[in-house]
Amino acid sequence: MTAADALAMPRRVAVERRPPIPNSVVAVIVLVTAEAMLFAGLIATYLIFRISAPDWPPRNLPRLPIPVAAANTVVLLASLVPLTRAGRDLRRGRRGNVTGPLTVTAAIGVLFVTVQGAEWVRLIGHGLTAGSSLYGATFYLLIGCHAVHVLAAVVWLVALVALARRGRITPQRRAGLEMATVYWYFVCVLWVVLFGVVYF
Image 1 (cartoon, rainbow, N blue to C red):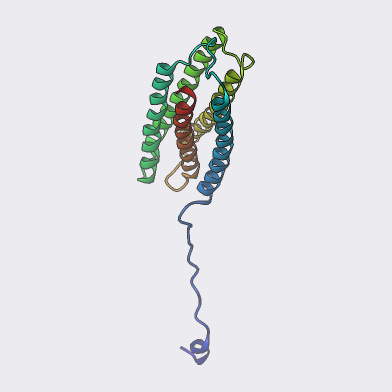
Image 2 (image 1 turned 180 degrees about the vertical axis):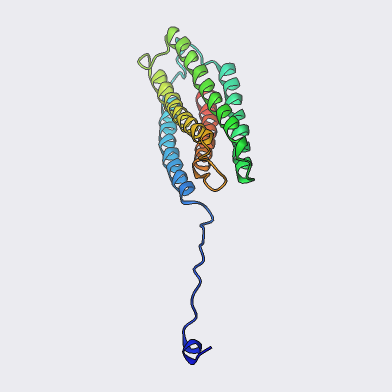
């Protein structure tokens, strides 16, 4: 070692630091927070109308199908099982187990919206429309807005299925799945809140 080497500043070794929560997950949490604020405003409006109305729901309108909605709630919550399993398998390095659970979750989402659509057709046939009363307008606004979010999440899951089949989702590249999982949990929890507020 020369004198110049001894006096030289030691070189700093660059260490790659990963954030404890990926930026993509933080982004979807911000999105979910904004969506939660939107629905908080809609639910507050619904509750104000409900409390101030002398008769809610109006006696001349059909009652909401609570048993069907309850069964649909169980179906939606069941979709969390395969989605959670897919994320867990991916973190453990088993990328081959991702496509099936994602497909099942997306199919359950489609089933959920289909059942809701069938019930809406029945309710409209019995006179509960968005223009029939304030009750009908707020019902379709709240539940319809949630259905749009479920459909958006289903499209996201279908896109992930296509990527998984091409081998694009790996333990190192799983941000899209983690983001979709956070959003799907939000959609499911939100439905539980809406079911309790609107149907009871």
